[in-house]
Image (cartoon, one colour):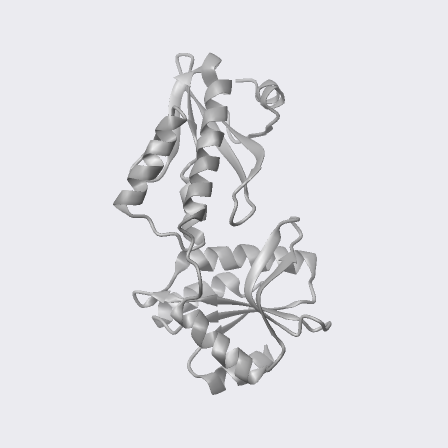
Length: 252
């Protein structure tokens, strides 16, 4: 495979991964988090290649709270088939083809990933979670007139980052707040990864901005793991009561 030629022919950015694998990045972004859609092309020998999104499309959907179900899986598999590719049970969009057909199937993979992303967007949770509602009430009581909901700000990547809460947006000491609910007694890890990406991006863009993540109470060992992941880019709080939250936020 000629990385440069394949990228130039399709207006894609070609990134070598190994001797037999390249990554082709498009200019099309995922609707709910701004990441660019792409695909891996692997030389599998005998003039054949395997093209795959490595399940990235559905992973991004899950990080914003879109839950997989059997019915949804069948619908997304049908969308993949409409674009002449397949969706595996593990959420991977893929196809195997002759090298000469790689340009065609690359476009099909990207079209399928785009269509699936937009379809998943219809299932994105609307409104606020119980925990988010609880935090909203506590923040509004503690900081009357200073709390902004669904606050968007541009990160160092150039992407728009949305935070459920921001405090003192008209002042230099603005504070962005991300909540992470617990599921089954542990932090919801897709939300942890999403928060990590956002906090790093905004830290690189505006180092002085105050960045806070509030966890719902969960298993102590799991909270410790999640907190360690976020420690370099945000202040981490564990919600126990409105009074405790007020004190911790003022200190964050």
